[in-house]
Length: 172
Image 1 (cartoon, helix red, strand yellow):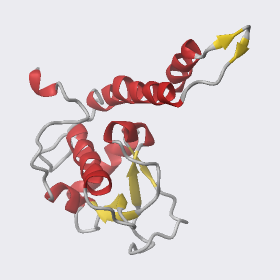
Image 2 (cartoon, one colour):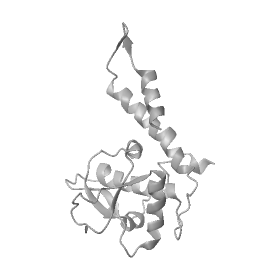
Image 3 (tube, helix red, strand yellow):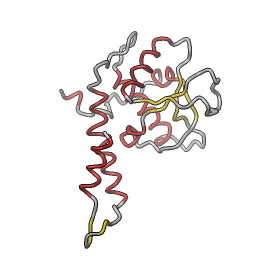
Image 4 (cartoon, helix red, strand yellow):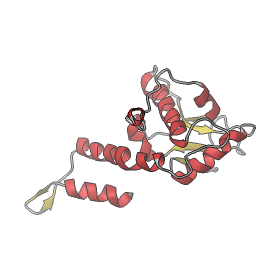
């Protein structure tokens, strides 16, 4: 995965008189977005254990709901100086534990280190975030904010049923 990104960068590095020139920020952004869309998303879509036990949604559908939720809250809504970017699973929501296990295994989500004190979350709860590789697709800033229960994200269903993670999936 990283080798693909590095080779994409190397192919695009500008040279002048045998000297490496600085790569423009827009080009860097396009390469990272392309990597996220063309490589990382396909990995999640084709992950062998895509079905989540006791849940009607597949792995990529839950990931897409999380990404769209954070995009809506951070980018589209009025400015909030303390928005959400992390999520956690309440202990009584055992049906979502399987999602966490598969999401971690697939590299779609990451567990935040327990040493980090996060406002409003008991130290006994694990806190998670989307993989930074997905941030370009959802136009999310790489910043740490507050956590929110995953069940709340899934219940607050967007009126937009299109899938950002795989926009052409409905055409198949």
